Image (cartoon, rainbow, N blue to C red; front, side, top):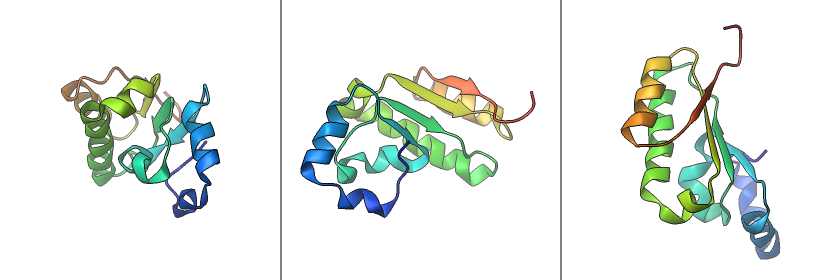
Length: 109
């Protein structure tokens, strides 16, 4: 799993190419809006941090990136969104951008 750490900038061009063509690359949280600087696109993206309302805004930014970036969207196979504290807001954000997401809970139902 790959997050959005600045250490991604240390990847070599060969490593970026390998990640961009690997059948499964799992990223999380704020990665999507930074994929171009990281140099590779994921096949699976998960947003698990929605325990604060401002993080719902961050999820919306990431979802808008998928909706507006054809290169990114063409590689993404799965989108997972945690629905805990702000379930209604997360579901509405995904629907408003037309993103077919899978929703999950990290804790008790």
